[in-house]
Every structure is written in structure tokens, then in C-alpha cells.
Image (cartoon, rainbow over all chains, first blue to last red; front, side):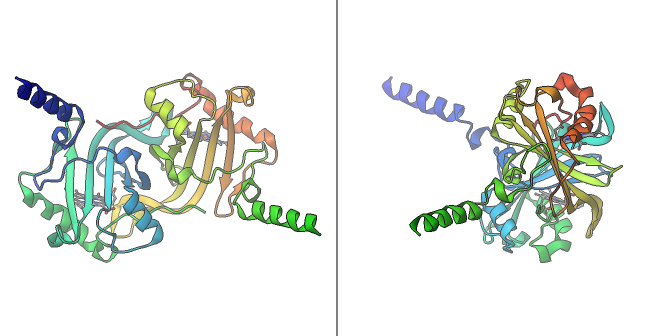
Length: 164
Length: 164
Ligand code: HEC
Ligand code: HEC
């Protein structure tokens, strides 16, 4: 009986901790990083063709490297690209602002583990359900293919914004 | 002699500290907040008419209140709106991305001090010189005038972005 009680407490603790168990996982094993809205800004972007307005944020390792101009980025760097539906501001229609959440994507640096795809692991989570994108781990070919033209910038399209 | 040495050390310490002395000051006395690129994201925005892409960031007090839905925002809240020239990405022209820095603006909450303008102090700094905007303290009428239509949202146009 005591053993069961102990096991139950342990299980409840894990279930309640907001651990990786709760988070959606991409077909290649990359789990959603939950803290990305607390990361620093890399840059905003706007995609008229997709009707999306976006920000790219980076964890401490990534932002420190981007600010210092270190390339390739070190292992442990993670970049998030977050997209919202682009809308006209209701009180000021010439301003295009974020509406509903669309998706979040990650690039995770591990030069050895992700050697086949330029040292970056890719993951995308769609809509409010954060549905992992891709039927199987092969989905990364699409990501890597599109990011290959910027191989000379460590496969990154986005340059970190600068201020005086 | 000792007094002069002490005074010199004190002066050098102030000069070297990156204090308000070094920072540009708006005609109403608000000095540039230097840490705004380390603040959390409130939202991106895009202004086709001005050719600007922007982010709004907020200090800890402001972001905590916005996330909690507390309104009006408490004293000590500061919001920054940073604008860059919008450009087509050189390797991916359908993406609109930031180019050169254009300006940074601040709204600083102090319900008593800025009572005349809805509890917000306004400041704008232009270009790489961070030239303070406005001939005299009256410049805030222009800011306040445009923000008055959103008085019911504590004079803020921007809603904080949400993610699932
Ligand atoms: C058709 C081209 C294309 C494909 C496919 C693509 N990307 Fe990107 N990606 C871009 C462009 C262009 C940017 C630059 C910013 C923007 O468009 O908002 C970008 C930016 C990013 C960023 C921010 C870092 C950077 O490089 O600027 C991440 C993270 C990212 N993509 C992840 C992914 C993931 C994950 C996938 C696949 C599931 C993917 N991308 C597939 C074109 C693509
Ligand atoms: C002609 C209208 C107009 C004027 C004048 C104006 N603003 Fe705004 N302001 C806006 C709009 C619209 C937004 C929403 C986001 C955007 O446009 O990028 C905004 C957003 C802001 C924000 C972010 C918080 C929020 O309310 O969304 C700050 C900070 C800000 N303005 C400061 C200033 C300052 C300082 C001045 C004057 C020196 C000023 N504004 C004058 C229209 C105006």
C-alpha cells in the first residue's frame, strides 16, 4: 500500500510539473520549448504572402552569439519564430498588428546530433493545439532545403536587429 | 589637493557609468531607457504607410500587468516602440524584415506626474543620433492626441500577443 501511495505521489508530481511529458513533440523528437516568449528579440518580420506577422526570439546562448557576431552559433542555441495572423488595427487600420496565433517554429543547434541538416534540428507546431508538423522525421528536408541558400549565414535568414 | 582628487574620481565615476548624463533627454525631461532591447516582447507591428517594421517591448512591471490583464497599468510601467526601415529580405524577397534603425519611442507611467496626459509620459528619439523629438515639452500634445482614441485601453494601441 505504502509503495502505491509513493508511486502515485511521484506520478502526480511529474504530471503537474509542466514537464516535457505535457509538451507536444515533433516527429524528430524535438519537444516544444515553453519559454520562448520570455526570450530576447532577434527581429520582427512580415509575410504579406502568408498574411503573417512574426517575431524571432532566441535563448540566451543564441542571442549572446548573434550580438557578438559569433558564427556558426554554439551548441545549445535555440531560435524560435512565432507567427500570428496579420490584421489591421481596429482603431488605426494603417497599422498591421498580430491577431490569432498561427504557429511556432524552432531551430536547435547541436553540431553533432543534427550534422545532416547543417547542425540545426527543426520543429514546427501548428495552431492552438500546437500540432506537431510532419508525418515522420523526414519533414526536416523541407526546412533544411529552404534554409540551404543561407548556409553562409549558418542557415539563418534573420539578422539580429541593431539599435544605436 | 586631496579634495580635488576625490572630486575628480567622483566625476570620472559618474562620466564612465553610462548614467543618465550620457543619454539623450526629451524636452519633457524623459531620458532614453537603454535596456529596452532586453525587455520582453509585447507585439510586433508593420506600417506600410511609413515603411517601418516595429516591435513594442515592455519592462517587467508593464509586461506582468499586460499579461495579467491589469488596467490601468501601474506606475513604473514603461513601454518602448522601436522602428526600423522595412526592407525585402535579400535572399527571400517576400519576407519584409528590419533594415536601418529609425526611431525609438517610450511611454512611461506615473499617474500623478503625467496626470495631464492620461498618466503617461511620452518620449521619442530619432535616428542613429537618438535626437530627442520636439521643440519644447508641448510636443506631447501630438502623442497624447493620437493615443486618446484608445483611452479605454489605458491609451495603449497595442494588445500583448498571446500564445497557447
Ligand atoms: C519556403 C522557405 C522556407 C521553409 C520551407 C522553411 N523556412 Fe524557416 N525561414 C524562412 C525564411 C524566409 C525565414 C526568415 C524570416 C521570415 O520569413 O519570417 C525563416 C526563418 C526561420 C526561423 C528563424 C531563424 C532564421 O533562419 O531566420 C526558424 C526558427 C525557422 N525558419 C524554422 C523553420 C522550420 C522548423 C521549418 C520546417 C518545418 C522551416 N523553417 C521551413 C524560409 C523557410
Ligand atoms: C498619428 C498617430 C500617432 C501619434 C501622433 C503617436 N502615436 Fe504612438 N502609436 C500609434 C499607433 C497606431 C500605435 C500602435 C502600433 C504601431 O503603429 O506600430 C502606437 C504605439 C505607441 C507605443 C507602444 C504602446 C501602444 O500604445 O501601443 C508607444 C510607446 C508610442 N506609440 C509612443 C508615442 C510617442 C512618444 C509619440 C509622440 C512623440 C506618439 N506615440 C505619437 C499612433 C500614434
